[in-house]
Length: 228
Image (cartoon, one colour):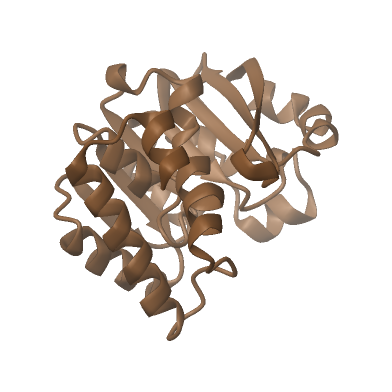
């Protein structure tokens, strides 16, 4: 908690929300598979602290709408919502057990303006194409596949941030065609060391220059078989 509190200047209410988040995550994890990480210190650093690093690469005070694709147990969108309560958050997650967990979590933490959708990104996009200031995804697929799932959701002038580990360069190099094809423009990547030697994280920041053609995203089986 100390690393989180000091780095991100949490108030007492936010600290209480993170405590409730951790306790509920661990409790529900005994029933459904939410995380392999259960040690309190590791959860706080590898899930909460890691999620909040988005605020180091994007000025979230200037962001109104955020979409988290493949959120799992709510990372990074729920920690970001705790730190930046003004955000209007949409979470897209295909597994119903996880969206049920998220619905209960949002009530427990008393969060407003959080929409949780059970569905696959390539199916849901029809209602949300180019709707969000910021789209985030945390290691749910290789970057060239992730771009096809996520960039269609980003509005022109908005951003997509992919959260990766330290070995991101090969994925990044393979993704140049996808970035261009989908209307994106690479801005930068930033590397961060997690506290207590718990690993390195990379955040890859891409802006949306042009509309994404309506043929994207394709069905995931096609994306996987023949990535851009």
